[in-house]
Image 1: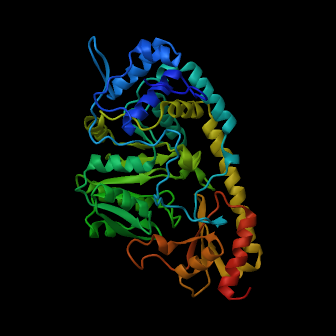
Image 2 (image 1 turned 45 degrees about the vertical axis):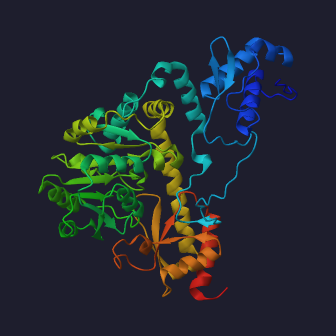
Image 3 (image 1 turned 60 degrees about the vertical axis):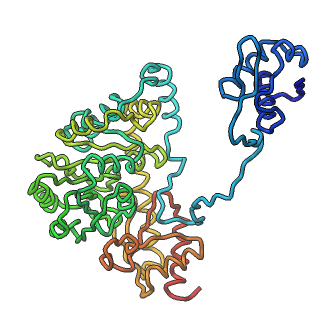
Amino acid sequence: MLTYSFEHVDGPIYEHIYKCIKGDILSGKLKPGEKLPTKRTFARNNSVSTITIQNAYDQLISEGYVYTVTKKGYYVAQIRELTALPPVSCKISYDIDLPKAPDFDVDLSGNDYSPENFPFSVWTGLSREVMSTQKSELMRVSPIGGAAALREAIAEHLRSFRGMMIDPDQIVIGAGTEYLYGLLADLLGNDKRYAIESPGYKKLAQIYGQRGIRCHYAGMDSLGIKVDELLRIDADIAHICPNHHFPTGITMPANRRYEILAWANEKTGRYIIEDDYDSEFRTEGKPIPTLFSIDACEKVIYMNTFSKSIAPTIRISYMVLPVHLVKRFYDKFSFYSCTVSNFEQYTLAAFIERGCFEKHINRMRLHYMRKRKRIIEIIKSGDFCRHCDIMENDSGLHFLLRLHTDRPDREVEELLAQRKIRIKALSDYDLIGGDAPEHHFILNYSNITPEKVEKTLSILAEILTGQP
C-alpha cells in the first residue's frame, strides 16, 4: 500500500501525491504493469479525499506514467529507457562556459545608460494606463509589421522630426536592429553582394554571415563611403551610416549623398540601407535630411532604433521599406508575428503620441551637450591637452582623440586594460587592413563621469610619457 508523508507540503496535496508516485515510478520502486491502489483505498489510507487522488491520477495519466483498464483500475505504464530525474527542489549546475564580459572600472567604448536618465515614472504611468484601457489590443497577436498604433506614432514622429513623408504601413517593427538586418537579408536575398563601410561596425558582417552572406568592405574618405569602392566590389547593397558614421563620426555631405543615390539608380536590384542609429543627438543645427527623404526612386531602406534615444535595453527598432518592397515583404513574411511585446508597443506608442518622447529627447540632448562640453573642457584645460588632438563632430555620443604617440594602438589598449580601463581605437574597426589611421581613439561619453575621464587622462599621460 502506498503511504506518503504530508508534513511540510508546499502547494496542493494532489500535486504532492502526483510527484511522490512519479518519483517512485522513475526510481523503479513501482514497476511497469504494477497495479495502483483504488482511489477510495488510497484516499482512506492517506486520510485525503478521493477527488485529491483522482486529480493526482489524472495528471499521471496525462503525462503517460499511468494508464487505466476499464473496470480493473490504474496501472504503471511501460516507459522505455526510464531514467530517474533529480527532485524539483534540487539545484542543477553544469560546467557550462558562458562568455563573460570583462570587468572594467572605466569603459570609454561602451553604450551603457544611466538609470537616472530613464523616465521611469512617465513610462510606468503610461504602461498602467495602456493595461487598463487597451486590454483587447494587448491580447491581440501583433502582425509581423507591428501594432498599427506604434507604426502610426513613428510615422508622425518621422514626419515632424526628420521630414519623411511615409505611410505607416511601410514601417516594420522588430526586437532590435540585428533581427531586422536578418529579415532584410532574407527579403533581398543572400545572393546579393553587400558592402559595409570600413572602418565600420564589425557585428554587421557577423549578422549577415549567419545568413550565408559574404560581406565586402568599402573604403571611406572624409566625406564618407566612396562610390568608386562600391563599383570596385560590384556591390548590390550598401549598408551605410550617412548621418553619423560609427566610428569616425563623419556626416556625409549632400554632394556625396546624391552620388550614392545615383550609384543605386544605375542598376536594378541595388539598394542602400540607411542606418540612422543616433540622429536625435545632433549637437548643432537641425538634423541632416535622411537619404530616404531625398530618394525619388525607392532605393533607400531606412533603419532606426529606440535603443539609443530611450534605453539600450528597450530593444525596439524599426525599418521603413520602399513601397515596392512592402508587398514583397508581406507576401514572404506575413505568417510571422511581431517580435516585440504588445505591452511595450502600445506603451511606446502612447509615449510618442503624448509628446513624452520629444520631451525626453530634448532633455537628453541638453544633458549630453553639457556632458560633452564638460569633458572637452577637462581635456583642453589640463596638462593632457599637449598629448592629444580632439576630433569633434556635430552629432552622436562619441568623438575621437588623436594621441601624440608612437606606441601601437593595441599596446595602448592593453596597458589601459591592465589598469581596468577599456578604450577602443579606430583601427579596431578597420575591416580592410591599413585603411584606418593609427592613434585615433574613441571616447564614448554617454555614461562616463568627469571624474572617470580625469582618471583615464592621468593614466594615459603616464603611458605616453613613461612617467608616473
